[in-house]
Length: 104
Image 1 (spheres, one colour):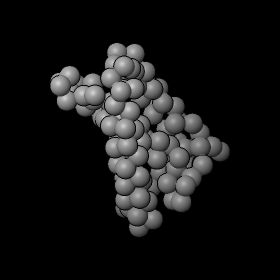
Image 2 (tube, rainbow, N blue to C red):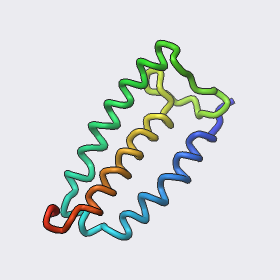
Image 3 (tube, one colour):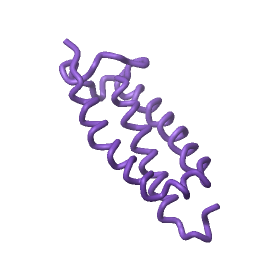
């Protein structure tokens, strides 16, 4: 039976943080969109690939009772989403707290 536990916790924890960041710094994000979006794409992809090797090699696994069952390769979609959203929060934080002289 598919579960949304992991997905629920990822989204409930991360989306409000992302929304608050956008609410506070949306102008800076729009002016620096490349700096906000490109690093999460690179980092999220890297971590997803690295994690897929670990899962494939049995280093760890995901409890089927906690995930939806949707996968890309050996990784649950929730894990991939976790990597990309975590990297997005970090890149947004960096842009938000950069001195104005370093932003566009």
